[in-house]
Image 1 (cartoon, rainbow over the protein chains, first blue to last red):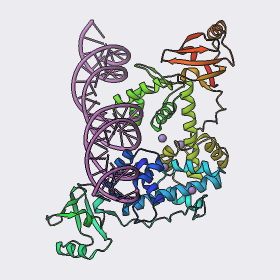
Image 2 (image 1 turned 30 degrees about the vertical axis):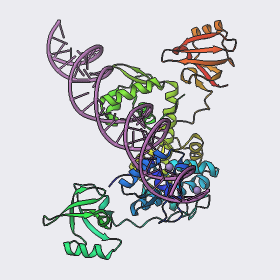
Image 3 (image 1 turned 90 degrees about the vertical axis):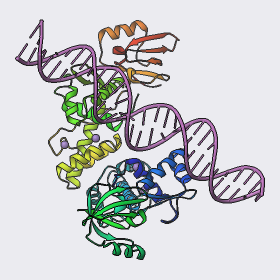
Image 4 (image 1 turned 120 degrees about the horizontal axis):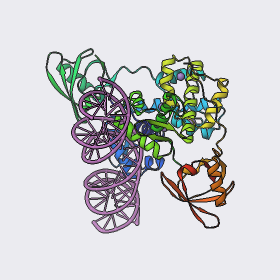
Length: 216
Length: 216
DNA sequence: TACAAAGATAAGGCATACCTTACAATTTTT
DNA sequence: AAAAATTGTAAGGTATGCCTTATCTTTGTA
Ligand SMILES: [Mn+2]
Ligand SMILES: [Mn+2]
Ligand SMILES: [Mn+2]
Ligand SMILES: [Mn+2]
């Protein structure tokens, strides 16, 4: 898996806030306008985010967040709005300044700090500007197999969503919960894995994206 | 003048903490060890910091902070240690985590926020690890003429330190407090300025570094 | 259907900040 | 003084994330 940079976090956060609905692709032109970057730069970044499996890019339509992108974005927005509350409620900063500074602080605190901050603030549910604060997400049951780096071994902890064809295919391959998989190759289209009995299997990304794993 | 990046702030902060005394040059090898970067990388950065007038680089000896470098570093360390206090005192974080997270937060809050934070914390004077918290600096009476960018016009607001020869030289040139100077050229060795009567004057960096100005 | 607007893409550039490899200069130690 | 260790410097590379210019493709509208 990859670690989001400050910049890609900001992109994911912007997609999260600017989109009309989770399934409605956000046109790149909206991101361009939001960040005041050029069309070319936004397009470049859209390709990178898609490569990292944080968004799906529909040319001429826009981008939607993947499950992982959604997770990163919601966590960012949660941190942003909690810091805003801290800045206005505890430091008495005007709300415009609070927004700008939260835009920096949002990148600087891990999960544990965020939750302690939330408790200190009394678990607020909205920011000083009325924006909802996304709830703390339940601990992820792992990461998508489609998003891990090659070389290491993982254990399958969940299949989600439960696509019938995928479940059937996995059953045929003898792949189920707790199965150990060693990752050989990872491309945008497919993943190459080795099972514990030595069999080498190639799965399309559409499948590996529904297989959730933890480091074995 | 330049704006310090996260990286250069970290360098200045490290110099501030690792040096033995303000005038004693800190060997680059100490920075190398501290950051775990290569000799070449640290050397590159030392040259850049010197170019931006934040340090003076004495080859084979090390670097010392200029007045401006000192200001940036002290402010950074102040922010670092105040955030540490916040994290341990208000969020109940263990002090090792607090140190690491403060290393991020220290770059994310402007002066105004820092002082509000200090007040909230009760104006502490030391960090959870016993390090002294540098006092808030009195508002700078301007920036060194040696550190401004060419093209703009400035007003002299202070001469510091008051080197007799420099004071004499300036007196001869008819340069004093409130004199307006337009900056033509700025090199590491000297500055070229134009006075309000049209005279063009070149001052060595050693002189321009003692002339403090504000945008006119 | 033709045309204009919007979007995608190719190619080359810039700044920051890190790296390796190789060699030169200086300082310190023997 | 010579050898060893430290420090400096040259040259070329990588990754990120922004830019301009120019061309091509798709979409939507007249
Ligand atoms: Mn941000
Ligand atoms: Mn808000
Ligand atoms: Mn830092
Ligand atoms: Mn400390």
